[in-house]
Image (tube, rainbow, N blue to C red; front, side, top):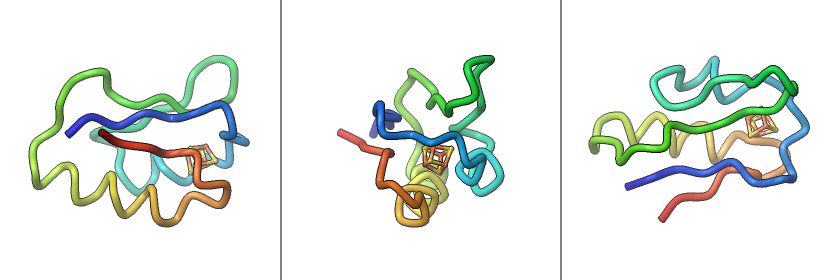
Length: 61
Ligand code: SF4
C-alpha cells in the first residue's frame, strides 16, 4: 500500500504526529508521504492519520 497527500492539505501537522513513519512536513508547510510501499503495520497508522485528517487530503492505492 502506498500513501499520497493531495493538494487539499492545509498543513495542520496532524499526520506526522500520528504516523511519523509515513508522513513528514515539507518546507512549504504541507505534508508529504513516503514514496515507497509501506508494510501492513505501518499502513495501519497511516490509515489512522487518513481518517483523522480534517480535510481528507490523505489517499492511498
Ligand atoms: S492531517 Fe491532513 S491537513 Fe493535516 S498535515 Fe496531514 S494531510 Fe495535511
